[in-house]
Image (cartoon, rainbow, N blue to C red):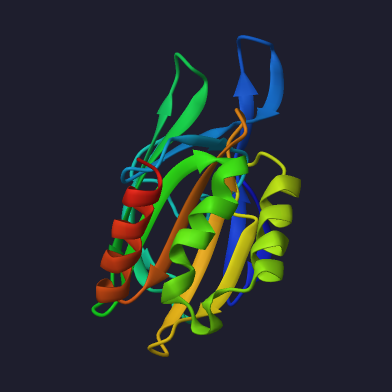
Length: 195
């Protein structure tokens, strides 16, 4: 196991080992399955491999990142010897007062989605802000990691964070963390805009 310190006591962890299929040492990929989000592959995951496994190749535990995170993380990870990777089932349990809205869309449709959401944001999200967000997701490389992480402000002075992950086929997973009430309003707008 190797790790790289991220911030606030959290480290990205990767796992290395020998594979008889290639007779080499390699870093194993991790396929993460999280709620209704599309599974994605990555080489590094937060915290997981820093824990002692229950048995070889198997972890099952709950942890909290703290420091402003809105979710408790329940992790179940097992090695799939046929596919030669780890399968990670992540269940994020929101703290009281935290909600999430999410969708998947083609990258080119971000502008239309943001225009439909603009009435919920303070000052309505200007055209230049929307253009900047569109450029950011256009330039985002496909990755298992969240690259775009933006704090936004709503008209009701509710904290709101927008995240995105670009998949290998170029589509985008976009989600927003905010209050449960605002998450419900945003999810309704997302569903309507992407019909």
